[in-house]
Length: 204
Image (tube, rainbow, N blue to C red):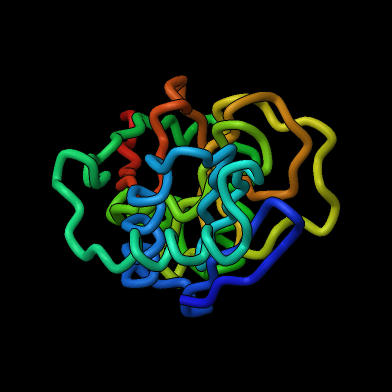
């Protein structure tokens, strides 16, 4: 882990720059250790990094660096704090815009795409670009599909989508360029936390 200054009151923690469950576990553990600190204004975990904004009246760069190193050297996080729950997402794959496109791109049938999408347990690697938008990875390489060349002006809330090796649910109406392969009435987007496990379940 490397710690670098971003601004007068923020630092970035960099972990190994690969997308993997091992790195995600490191990010999740550090996030859980650091978010409980006094004087932390905001903390934002992502795939391989954590942005931490701190109170300059409590810390300077040297002191926040020391605290981070001390906290992150603690290896054990209690099971009740670490996020290991599985969130199940009932999904209607008949309600889609791009399922046929994904199938054709990967030389698969529609049922094969759905089977591959539902058989994987995904992890929450990051949350953004809008509140509640959880980036879930990795989709099976057999259904990985590039984003649309021209993003749509409006994607309906609840749309289940694929972009490259990631999948996600749109938590609100939004512009977007992901491939829409289904729809869910799931509405508890505030439940998502870094490291969570998510599984899509087909509605027959």
